[in-house]
Image (cartoon, rainbow, N blue to C red; front, side, top):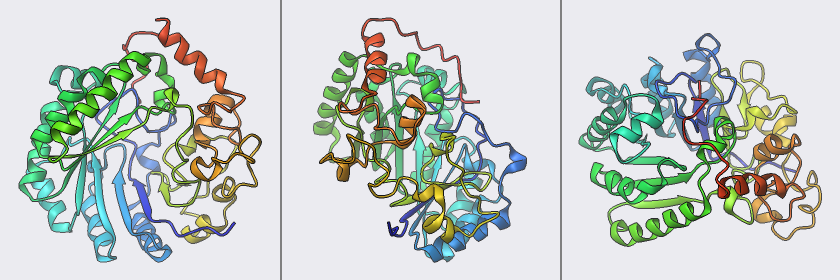
Length: 360
């Protein structure tokens, strides 16, 4: 299958982070500081991405502010004509740092928040970050930058959804992504503590709809569906290797941020291969493009052009086979894995949110 051109690059500059969120999207095996790409290597990545057709770059981590060369990377990306977004916890976004980022040409900043109240937010993050986030939001707006925010929703904070939306609107956010937790990586390790009950989720969705009426003109609200309570999975990043790519701190090139956990694939590294070859020709990026790889029931399913068989990372982590139909799908022979997990929560057998794993 001929690959389209990637639209966006997610540049994971580091896995280091002051927060310890139990649903962290970082992989289980974190890359150490000494394995991170150098400034020169990241500059080469940006130039190759631009040549490949990438239009947007999202600098993230971990916490990208821990990289002292962040401003240099932002400046080079803007010189290449790329739209540059920073995804941050806000910890470390001082007056001096944001001034340097603005001078470098940053286009927008996405700030995470864990809950509406400081006590709960800091408990979830494992770090006293709430006040630092409030200050970061203020600095972003004072510099005239678009403020986007996101919150991962789970059992411990779903009851605060209206308060979270009100908080983000008051902080000046233009856009808020309400992302129900996706259970892979650290979130899968902590699924018994994070997964909400169906009743709690339904109440949260009703609260979201009320908030749409109340805040709809002040802030754009995006509701990310909770996989485990759906009949069909979401598309796999718009299709495996179709729209975007991720580069891990050590230089491995991934179809998405979670795919490093698929042990049956070997991912090429920008230290050894050109980015264009990896995108177009590498076995890993071609592994699940198109439809020929699909088993039944996906191959003959009318939904295959809608969800592309679902999430390959989720399929691998729940079944051990990245080719398997996503267990979230009601037509999947592995649906029982998800149903059993949901059933345990509904019957009150799941644990309380004390988070045995903290993403580090």
